[in-house]
Length: 246
Image 1 (cartoon, helix red, strand yellow):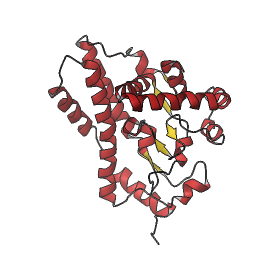
Image 2 (cartoon, helix red, strand yellow):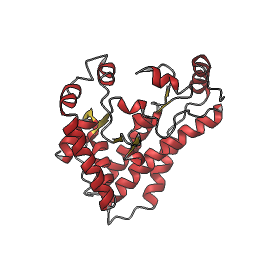
Image 3 (cartoon, helix red, strand yellow):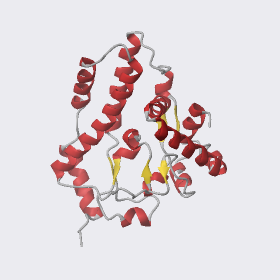
Image 4 (tube, rainbow, N blue to C red):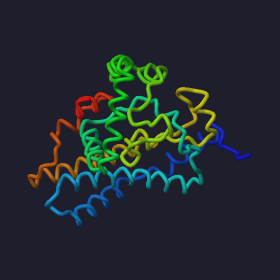
């Protein structure tokens, strides 16, 4: 039987990461330079979408580097979706870029996601009205209130327990990982075992803002109302409903 890390062992590893392996923003700054070296000015919206995807992927890569340094591997597996019932708070700018990603997909895949979302909002109308009205800036227990109702993420395919927009899943989905027994997530709505690499959010968002600012400085049309879209936060379902008019 595979031996999983205990909570106590994970605490020690977290301390090591915080003491020795907290990253800088160097990789993100290098990514910005690399992106603009290849920038073709005839399609700023497509460039921004590519940059968005690259920065998200970079977060995954940086997490893997830390994992290698402390010799750990997540026990999260495809089809494990316990954390896909957490409330996801993002900016309007990120939500618009996620929608741009969906619009860039082949017609059949895009239509499948649209139908999925329509059914999702119809099926969960009452829960969405209740849970997405909780003031997450004021209610300290908003996560518990949300999770206990078992409202799935709008992009969770309940047949396969997989994400329909995995390539652009938001930062909270990327930075929350379990290295202990998967049973921990099955036994508790908010388990203590998983580790959050939330410190990457600052570097990712700084880089994304820098790219958007540069494009706007060059008077490019990128479909972002800046700076408003970068500083408006809300539940993912609320943005989807308003942007897609579902």
